[in-house]
Amino acid sequence: MSTNPLRDPRDRRLPRVPEPCALVVFGITGDLSRKKLLPAVYDLANRGLLPTNFALLGFARRDWGDSEFSELARSAAREHARTPWREEVWERLANSVRFIQGSFDDDAAFDELAANLSELEGSHGIGGNAAFYLSIPPAMFPTVLKQMERTGMAESTPDRWRRVVVEKPFGNDLASSRELNTLVDSVFTADDVFRIDHYLGKETVQNLLALRFANELFEPVWNGHHVDSVQITMAEDVGIGGRAGFYEKTGAARDVLQNHLLQLLALTAMEEPVEFSAEEIRTEKLKVLRAVSVPEPEDMERFAVRGQYEQGWLAGQRATGYRQETGVADDSTTETYAAVRLGVETRRWAGVPFYLRTGKRLPRRVTEIALVFKRAPHLPFAPTDTEELGHNQLVIRVQPDEGMTLKFGSKVPGSVMEVRDVAMDFLYGEQFTEASPEAYERLLLDVLLGDATLFPRNAEVEASWAVIDPLEEFWAGTTPQPYRAGEWGPRAAEDMLAAEGRSWRRP
Image 1 (cartoon, rainbow, N blue to C red):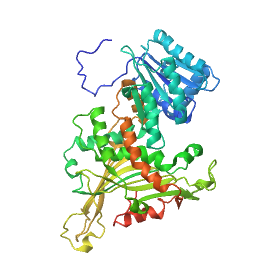
Image 2: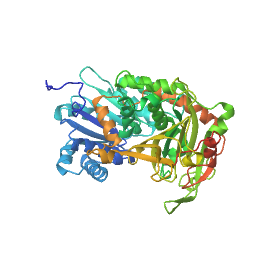
Image 3: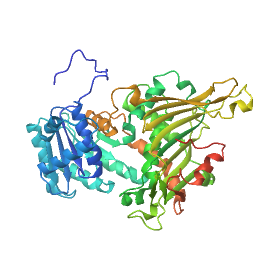
Image 4: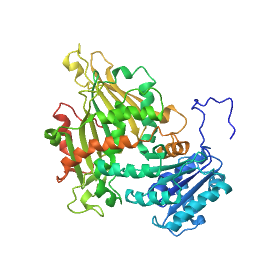
């Protein structure tokens, strides 16, 4: 393949386009594929970021032919695409779409899939390169991986690469995650395994690294000398929808705390990597995750809170309680809310509490990281002048309204000295003309490029479970504390911060 002699390979500003390849999606008829993966493939094609020689293969139990699958893929992509719809773009993609019908234990179906990949090497020039996306329940991973091993589809050679994308949850505790990691790594090499956490594909999360390490303004105060506490919130205003089967086995802590929030904590607390590469960034994140401390056993009741939503009102609509959701047991003890106080035992963060919380049926959908700074050591103003002055805050909004807010004190115009909080906002949508790509767009492209910067390795997954397992052990056999739909969680979560003279930031 010819290369541009005028291009510096270190220059990331020009679009990177993968080599010829195929994307194989197991569970192509599921919600994730229809709402995220298929639209992401179209959007990448529409932006000119897919190779000319590209093929999309779907594998599922539905009894469909290529044309029926192509029509489903087209309607899903058109409904959920981020970029404008262009029929000619889809027509080019549709010529390379295949569907293989079969169950995961069907040897003949996997033999057909392997034969299709071999055939596409000649007909579509994909060069034997393929990425396999496991959009399936984790219980099915062993069956699919063994089939891929049997057919030789998982084997990378000097002439071709084969990669696998694994969706969360990565196990349900430390022991099961190690078992799953061992299985995946026995079929694929460690470098060919991409554990996807879609939060790491969000533009604002990546901007956190630019904010810290490309500016001299923030890093000098990004430590325990100046920061009083850190609050990381992921709130959802929806319930569990039709995911009762999954949620009853998982709960909020395993579903969100173990992966999304601990990854955000690691990016917030990590040291500067020696270079912006996948290996160096993962090294610094892993140091943080291994330094995370959970509350002492005698403090667990105060600093590890879980809740479950009851019937209430949200956005003017009556919302049913968790136990009234379809498929949920009347006496379910699954949490829909979790809040915990963690520490990071490093020189930079010693003594700074990290408060993490996540929940469903909360007042609004928002994900943010808030650094709450210490108060000025001395205020030369009369107490009445600063009654409405709070802590300085730096808030990174991951979603929605992606951007950043800096909250600080300013004098109110007038003849008297009165200082109160004001906010300075930076919004991506207003500053940049190009819309941010959807998380799955970025992550799918990185898989096809082989760029693992935004994908946790198994050591990170295991370090995260080492944080969550003691919490789950403490919560086992207990009943979550109730909170009404439309509230910011159970009262105990407010008490957790109030006990130390703090309060949750209201997003």
